[in-house]
Length: 440
Image: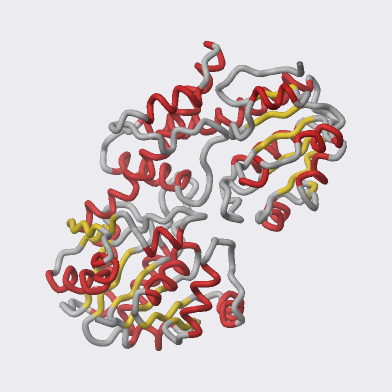
């Protein structure tokens, strides 16, 4: 059944939700308080890079199933379902700041007419829906026609459109039977296509998202700690990860050692989850250790650069990759940018290149040099650091690369190159969790 869907917030989660809900047949209105963003969307411009998203948005706006507005009042008045996809930035103590969530819920309570389901899509700590209920009652009093549900997103940046259109699982938490029924109808096209619908109570749905992200971050930090051991033992962390991944109880995903995780989710959600556990009276030290190991991953790469160059002052360093992962222009909590800061603090001249994230990186780090392409970054460099594993970096011409660099030193923070090939090409090569090699 076609439904009238409103999405409040057109960031990474909100805009993908807008496009995917329209693509499965619903009438969707995307709402944002940022007028410039709305005007840009009207003009067909995307506020961030996400593969295939622009095409999907243009297709759905062209079909008139998707429109954008800054007028929340008129948008929510006739809505069946309102997704709240606003930001939940961390406070100084790590707690999620939910002021935008509350404001959005109150706005819906003021303007909604008829039976309306308010759905948490933003990642929020357990207990948020109960607080939203209280805020709604304060706004308009008890109303059985207005309910809150939880529907956490499981979107990977760089693969968000595929994850939205062919989700492995759809998690919904609610209380009222009619809320579950509405969510079943909303997602029926995806469920009929093979996606699994999981129904729980609200608190379980809220907590599950933090639990998932924390566990994935744990796997990454485990791989990075394992890399430190492999380097000392003369073992190969990639081979060890393959052995581990062959066990179906473990799985290979998220066991790639490197510079660590970043982005808008894992760092923020780890802190919020830890704050929630503490507030509930449980100390969860493992979460703090995951964060510590993530910082250590950047330290380990910096140590390799120091080992290869000795003093960093005045040295030119090519940083290949600035986004926290390939497929996005997102530099929030980006390990490559943290590495750039540390290198510049020691007097190095850092020149970066990234296929998508350079404008955002320059805004974050004004002193960072930017190159036109990878070879431009490598020109005259005393060291090259592979920081984000964009596929194009794996295809670099090693002979040309060796020819333009001032010194043949490569530190691979993502294990994108073959050590034997790098040695044959004349490089001193420092991988992650593997034995360094030197020119033959």
